[in-house]
Each structure stands twice: as structure tokens, then as C-alpha cells.
Length: 275
Image 1 (cartoon, rainbow, N blue to C red):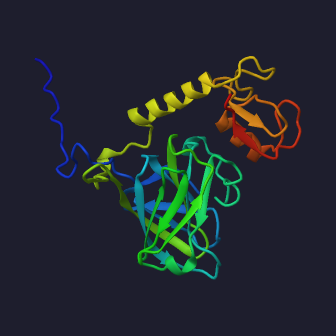
Image 2 (image 1 turned 90 degrees about the horizontal axis):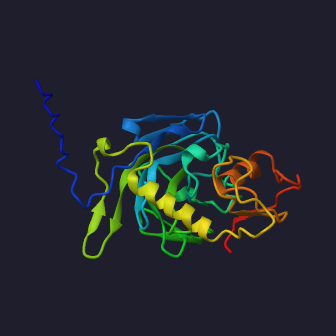
Image 3 (image 1 turned 180 degrees about the vertical axis):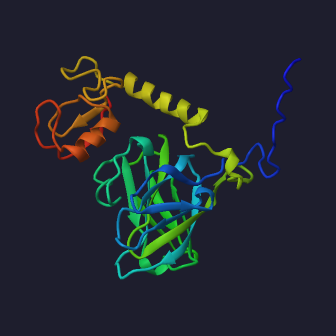
């Protein structure tokens, strides 16, 4: 007897132009972070001001605005929320205590400090990576703050939320993106999100990798293959002059060891290599 096909459950709030639901990454989070409300809310233990780093559960589309609400503030700490974006996926990111400066030393990460006075309980904050590569935040009262970053808006990015200092709990309210004649909004049904790269993100990453392959100087005396992972192209120039690692590995080497894997010279910086 043939198996009966399972009936597909269609979400009534999800349309062709809806954005996928967005929540916090369930696996990659600071040691003092706990998730609730189906992954939409994160809380940090007040025993410390740090170890509250979190990421979005999926890559953010170009021009997509994310909206958060501050739920709770506490402790005698100074400072508040830090918001930003990362080119390196959460799974490939070494998890330090702080986004600033631990991650933002790398050109593949960028974050801004949100002023304490707009991080009160009940405050809503919107942030996005603009087409010119600048990071913009907008508070409930309409005030905006914009900072230029080293990020490339054409590359895949993940949202980075550091629940820092006085800020101890935030909720992800959703996202929206302006199109030609209408605005797409994220679907509130979490069944539309998986904490893995979707097909579109995989295609974007493949396109990015092919771009690096096409622009790699194969005649250079350095390595064509990353000497750390041996699976990606060496597309990153280190401050010592060697081009021997891919960008995710350059980030890990820079943060973990601080020296070039070939000559052992201290690393001051690294940049994606373009011929």
C-alpha cells in the first residue's frame, strides 16, 4: 500500500515576499547567556558585565533592518548594548568575552556602542548595514547614529548582539526590508528558520569564494591553499606580508595566537587579498 504523502503545513502569515523568521542563534552564545521565548529572547546573568555575545540564527539580507527591544537592565555596571555585524558565520567565530574590542580588531567584524540613555527597559532599537558599508542604529525616539565600517555589504553577514553592561535582557522583534513598492517583513513563525545556511546563503558564500579564487594572485610566492584548514583558498594578506590563510582562519589565528603561521611574526592586521 503506497505511503500517504504528508500534508504540508502552510503558515498563513508567510507570503512569497516575507523574510524568513529571525531569532538568536541557539548554539553560539556567551557563557552567561540563556535563551527563552523560542529563541527570541536572550538574558545575561548579572554576575558579570561581559560574556553576553550573541548572533542571529541566520544570515541577514542586504538592506534588512533588525529590531530589538530592551527588556531588562540591572547591576551596577557601566555601558550598555553593543550592536553590529560579522562576515564570519557564528559557527566559525571564536567566542570571546566582548564584541568590542575582541572581535572588532578584525576587519570582518564591526559593532557600535549603543548609548545608555536609549537602552532603558522598553526601548526599541533598529539597526542595519547600509549599502555603503556603514552601520546605522535608530532609537525609539527617532534619533540615529551612523558609523562607517570595513564590512562589504555585498558579502553575507550575520547580526551580532552583545548583551553588555547594564543591559541584561533583549528580545528580537523581527526585521523588515524595503523593496521597490512595498516593505517585506520577517515571518513571526519560527518554523521558517533553521540554524543552518539556507540555499541562498550557500550560493552567496560560493559566489564569494569564486570571487576570491578569481582574484587570487596564483603567481605570488605565497600559498594557494590555506595552511590552517587546507580546504579554502589563501585569500588574506597578513601584516608580515604572507598570503597563506583564508579569511576565517586569519581571524582565528589573529585572535588565538597573534602570530603568522609561517614566519611567527606578530600580526598587527590582516586584509582580504584582491589582485
